[in-house]
Image 1 (cartoon, protein in one colour):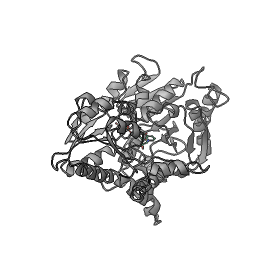
Image 2 (cartoon, rainbow, N blue to C red):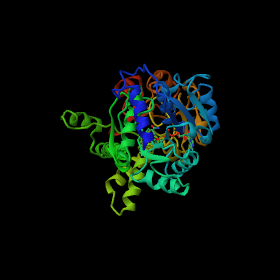
Image 3 (cartoon, rainbow, N blue to C red):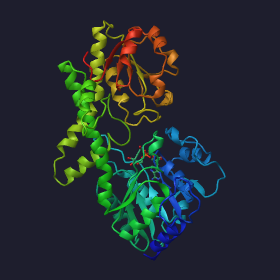
Image 4 (tube, rainbow, N blue to C red):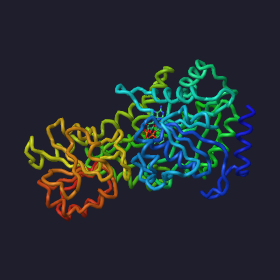
Amino acid sequence: MGYIIVLTAKLNAWAPSGKLEGDKVTKESDATIGIIGLGYVGLPTAIGFHDAGFTVWGVDVSQRTVDMVLQGKNPTGDPDVDDIVPQPGIEKWHITTSAAEAVPHCDVVLVTVPTPITHDLKPDLSYVEAAGRDVFNHIKKGSNTIVVLESTVYPGVTAQTWLPIIEELGLVIGEDVEIAYCPERFNPGDAAHGVRQVARVIGCSNPEVGAALVSLYSKLTTEDVRYVGKLEVAEAAKVIENVQRDINIALVNELARIFPALDVDVEDVLSAAATKWNFHRYTPGVGVGGHCIPVDPYYMIQRAADVGVPAGLITAARAVNRSMPSHVAGVVTDLMWNANVPAGEAKVLLLGWSYKAEVGDPRETPAEPLAATLLGKNISVGAWDPHIESTLYPEGVVAVDEITDAEGYDLVILATAHKACLEIDWKSLLTKMRTPLLYDGRRVLDLDKLESMGWKTHAVGKPV
Ligand SMILES: NC(=O)c1ccc[n+]([C@@H]2O[C@H](COP(=O)([O-])OP(=O)(O)OC[C@H]3O[C@@H](n4cnc5c(N)ncnc54)[C@H](O)[C@@H]3O)[C@@H](O)[C@H]2O)c1
């Protein structure tokens, strides 16, 4: 316990207000922070703590990631990280593949490893377990190192996964180690909501550790940092944030399927409804992607099932969003048949492949099931995305390196609203189309303008 008081004192001495002034740091801390997993979350977190004056030890099992970071390069697809990776030789910045090397130096270790789902849509906690084991194995007896899980999980995971390992290794809570949970909420590709600008919540069964962590994270972010009580509260808060987004998006996606059947454009309805003060507007699309929203609800569904409580709404929302790519594939197939595109010769071009605009991240992208469904209908699929390396496309999808190379397509689908995709030379692309069909899968294009150029435009939620 004494150590925690020392840590709190260290942090408070460094900035007695417990808050940063703007985002400039004038003093340096002598606390050392370990970050396990240097991906989309871990790397900017490590950079953030280093910028805040802390000594940082970053660990990743991927030799490629470690090599790139050591060269001052960004191994992730988040463009906001491109220019901020510390350059070789900088002080207080240590990067390694070895937790054994890093952990003994650290006062606090943050774990930011993946929490994916298995093929049968169940939580895959193997990374949390493996990373935890690696950290706890190298904690010095008596050091009372604080280990914080930041990965998104369902309520109960931190304690259920890590306490048995701690016990097995003969470590004592409160003497050798403390565990806590602090979910990451930043938004890759969105500089206004980076790791240094988002509010944080901390869950921990020991309020003194919670207070020390509030003090620590207050050096990282300019926003509110709050101790919220036990681990499970913070774990649940994170997962329901993403469940709520999935449900809200599912509602507009469902409406985008109903209203065209009534000969009404869903966007007109949403614009009208949004004039009411308490209506929350979301935009329909070809589907929901990324590492969080299409994944995290399955964590909540599993936990509800474990305790025998139905999670019907969460499950239904997931089903709606998951079915959007195949719904869109069906709509565009009909559009091509109605335009007399010969069966067996149809060619579709996807503009954008990342799951969201301005990042080069293809994880769980709805473009993949959309392309797979089209390929399954014997329709050729090409994809152009200036943020994605051509090697990342799945088999069967033709990588279009330059948009000027795209030729002979029958239908273009705007799948990701990258600025580069919105601003292509639409006139020039039109001259190279075999059939001038365009489908706005994100409701971001000026369809009237494109129609006046000669495109035959359609969009998700718009009557045909
Ligand atoms: N990406 C986001 O937008 C975002 C936002 C908030 C929360 N999250 C959550 O944060 C967690 C991490 O997500 P991410 O997007 O950074 O994942 P990521 O795949 O980009 O990065 C994870 C990193 O951990 C490394 N790793 C795996 N096992 C390891 C181990 N045992 N030791 C050391 N390194 C290991 C991997 O090599 C990888 O570099 C997930 O739970 C995710 O749900 C992600």
